[in-house]
Length: 485
Image 1 (cartoon, rainbow, N blue to C red):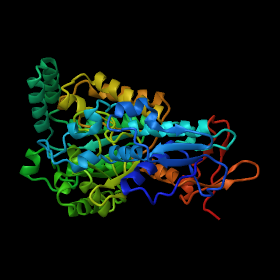
Image 2 (spheres, one colour):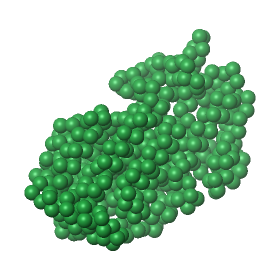
Image 3 (cartoon, rainbow, N blue to C red):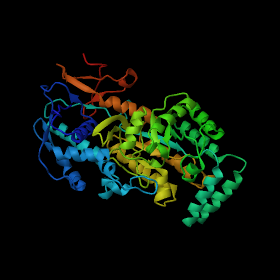
């Protein structure tokens, strides 16, 4: 628990940095400033925060005292810049797909992409609060439901359902260019054997069965525009959502209870009204609300595209990942509010950044061994576990032998088993986002005479029941009331 200073003297980005820092620390805010708990103070000291490596080794210059923790104001701004992708929001550089290049990201520039530096700073704040408390009470919000200490979401982009031989041919050309003769031969043999069958649908069913056997319910992102020759040549829209292949895929996903979201086509980044149109179209097909979105090719205009998503009514986005490498693009593996840099404001839209994606290695890093993909994915998952965070992974269901990925299906099973062995809370991404927003809203009114925190939340009952407070040692847990009196 912690009492916070007034935010009125902070600019919007500094306030955002403070809010994210406190949220990720899991130290709930206490309403009564007179309560005998640790207080946080913002200082005007400027320790120099350009070099993130020095910030990390210097524990983000968070000072401990007797019942007080002090954070320099420039630290809040720096954390805000990282968590909002501020440098990328201001960048005019573009790659061949219209994306801001990964090299514009400050964590890439300082070789810290594998580190959730914002989440680590929050852990430093939490440790400082505990160390500074003395005999003052300290309780934290439990990180995830059911006593789990971290979370993981399996997500899939449905990029291919029809015309699979075209994608096989493109993949063979890619493999040949890398000199992967053995994989070319295996792909050709499997493709010939699959001529009278649909390997895409078979791969999708096999993937769903693998997940069902492990009790996993995944989230899917589906293209929902009308393809043209131009969109197909660009690798954008490749199938009609009302077509036979897409309809069969959507039926299978619905039967398994999967969460179905929009995979925004290229045009949505420039014409935001298309977000609403594609969202309505997909909701009509699946007969359920479409609350999440991820951009195809992770193609977005940082900040601007998020504003279009929010205006279209999406609850969350998961596009802030690197297309050409894996890691922590926003310095977190968690859920944070999206940021509109032009308007200098946090949006209602929540951001759940992609941490790991299969094709980041095979397509861009030219790594064809699926075991290497999985090793990196599990390594990043361990890092998310270390900070009680959320690992979001992307696996493309078209990664099957007939489409040029002969060893991929077995690797997926290895990934799922490796994640489960580490004991995460696993659920569709939308549910995880909803729960994290509810956790963020936990407050403490004060301390009861018996020393228990009087905590409350306005979260719905279904979510509230899973919210608890805990002592730092985990020895005791405390319930949370529905609403403040």
